[in-house]
Length: 410
Image (cartoon, rainbow, N blue to C red; front, side, top):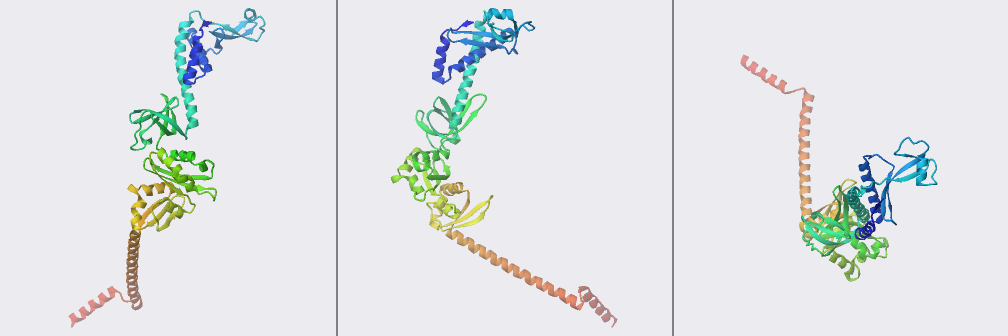
């Protein structure tokens, strides 16, 4: 046995406080390290009857080999005679197992080197497992962290004892991330790579809006108001479609709150990002009209609706065209994401011009069709004359030739 003392247990308590790794994990890792070192020492990697035991009361650790008590020993590594076993334990009988202390006298230095390597590896693995378990539960949820630093344009956010990474594509364009400030982020993914465990968070994900509404609007948390869909362009604008499961509760009013208190809190959390609350409808025409708000809509024509394509033509007043489309097409783009419909927006004058062009093309097509029918009728009459009188071009030519012959003879 090797005397360790109380230093090991003090180190275990410190690791448990700092990293949350239990004492049992460290002791098990130390015992495994002892067994590994002993197998290297005796050059017997395949030995299965060797284990390390730590006595917490005496603070000693040793390597033991388990042997079976037999009458005639055939294998010294796995068997022991009854007589030798009695010297260890007076009450032992045949077929019992006894543990024999086989710790070498000069084993302390070798065990320490091996234990250091194994303990470092096991502690790292334990930390990875703890982080993995913790963030697998948090994946897909909103959490609060503290911005630590900026590395290669990536924002490093401390969440508890773990550092998460916010890539550039998950950041809000134009947002300044100041180290030391608190931030709400969405846990997007947990990557368990061979080198390290990486937690990916987002500040631009649409689900952040959902989580904020669930926190601020009790009716959503209670299931009275339901969020049907969310479309977001982070830092600029968000459209959220809501519906009420209670006819007495106004879904839009519940989300706005008294004097706009609820929506203003969410807008402040999103750094003054514009939010349009849309009333959901099963009727696609009404739903599309609601999503294009604040623009007024004259009419909505459903061009195609099946499981593959959903196309709609929206007519708006001339002075509402730019508002319906939005800056850079943002309003109609968000409406498309929210509804799943491909929306083509035209002004009244554009729609009237399209109708005139279509009617003109239709008229030309009808005139061309009439001319073709007339030509076909004339062709049919010529065929009828030939069939009726039995005269064709060759006969006419022969008659002409015969007249010439008669004239020459005269």
